[in-house]
Length: 285
Image (cartoon, rainbow, N blue to C red):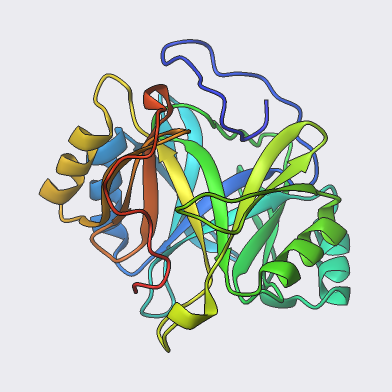
């Protein structure tokens, strides 16, 4: 399976899925305090870690859950913490060149990361960074389970620009949705598989501090639930941006970790109607 919205029962063997170009295939936390971040996510998701050092790519940490890689963590060179999404590429250098032809600018040059692959980071024409990854043979990446990537959304004011860029780069098809909560929400597909979504910011509500970004959803263990996971995050120095609320895809909340990185948590077994809690506000930074 790809990274979609299907429920995966905890305790079952992780699903086997074919990786296609354009599918989410890695996530990376860039953090201003690596030790604090390691402790926070270990307490939240039971992550364990393996540390690596490479003369070219530098030091990085692989996060594992139940022995399977789920993310990497790396010290930030600046003063901002954030989660970064990587999309699969059969040839990273070739896809970087193609992205640049469509208006992207490379911000982190091609480099090889042990156990992960060749990767690069670009600023897309919709003003949000994203990564490209050409996985190496030993690459593994668990998704669709508690403590792993469940879904990702690009939040941007340049909605049409984002749609055009990523559809040209990866051949996504798109389906437009609108609700009273989100008037412009586009889901991107590869074949029949939903892989990502794009959320449009409303220009009238944007401030000088508003930044386009990716919002990554990590799975909550149904035995624990979203609400208890949020309480654990608060107890370990996290902050709540949006209180837990019900949606048609699960019970979710939006948080910041102790170093300021934004992410969401979701329990897809609790899908229902929209609740009364405030929905995600992409303009508050």
